[in-house]
Length: 627
Picture 1 (tube, one colour):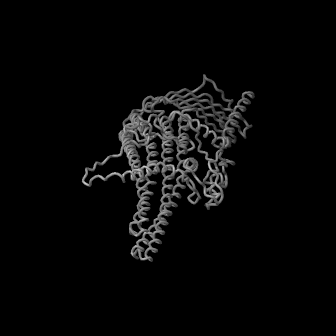
Picture 2: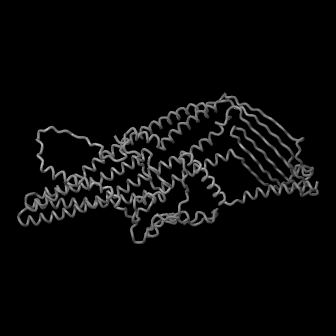
Picture 3: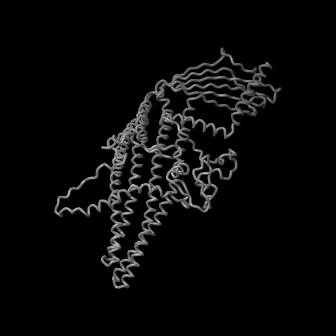
């Protein structure tokens, strides 16, 4: 008996050691284990959803541009939280000593310098937004959290271990003599849910009862048991049991699709706002030039009036125009400041940071208009030698052709087909229709009767201070308790389940309508972007010609005014026309570029990599996408 008791002592010690080791796992190990599981899931689902696996991490470098600007430009901030989680003071009972920790970036996009504004190109702005934007980071965390949930659902169908160790001091005075002693036990459970619905569990428990009275008797107990529960009607079937897991698997794919869709939308928003800031800057420059010209016009008018060649009324007109020009210049300047502040917030930078945008982005858009203006001047010279048509001649309006159309101005039906094929949010909506169909199936299953088969086997005996005087327990297969139980819950009361089942069809109809609604919205947006490109392209040509005409008008009117053959009002109107034409030209160039990007976004053709940089769509055969 001594040898058997020693072996059981060792068994208790081994079980206790295993359980103690499990409880001593550090918080860091748990976090890293979760990160590894999520990384594997995201890589797997990226391959499934996108056909490729990109680098994915929610751990941002600690020295992101936002923090460096706060420090390098000496900007005010409220607390350590403004700089990042790694700068927070460690509070009492914090589980990880070195986390969150500083993590320098391996590829610095920009290096701000003290007392100098930071200059950003459009491509750099896209990368800065991907790293610094609050919204961008939240969308990445949504993907991570969906993968965490899937890891939990998968774990529910894996082997689950549970262990515990107890030590109890006990006094029993219910008998003739008071008995004191200790009851020490260790238990290890193993359970698993099968995807067909059956639930299995096994347990091994070892205990030692030791009396502190009556000679110090002691006895070891050992108990092994196994149970199984098999649903036969309601709740049975792989498609019913694994439904939460199936939905969790699909939710990760949806999160990846939604993140990819967000990246496209976010990149176009950055480009649109970037160009809008430059457009506003151009309006500031145009307003400033117009203001200078009107100051000069007012001075010339005063000199002509003093010479008796103009009236005081014309002087007042010039002064009024000058004051209006000053107001437009101030309004344009302040609007520019507001625009660039909003842009900084969009890409996650402090609004009070000093940054500048690269003007060449706008110059490249306007550069092609120089040819249009040159052609306009040439046409006007040749028209001077042509006789004007009679006033009563028939006037035929000629619609713009497609000879100057851009490569993305494709046939409408082809554009819609591309959108139906590539829009990831449409895939999500279509997937949710299938999800709601499965909900109908699961809801119908809940209406059935519940029939469950239980089985249980138990070997060995436990020990307490009341049985401490008995011999040590043994596991013997010929001495056990075996039982089977069959339970039937008839479906007499299923009101709640009935209502859930009926509601599932309503949810299905809504999911179908969501697909139809999104499809219509997609078609509307694609058709609108094609019209926007068409309109902006023609507006660009018109405004380029208008600038050419307005510049010529200002020059000729200035000469006539100096010669006394034109009134100051004519000169002022010519200056206004030139300002309007220049602003219109910039607006048309920006609008066309934004329409191109929005078209690629709305058709799902724009590709964004993990750094936030886009890859634009280029039709393989231009002739196939034009009439």
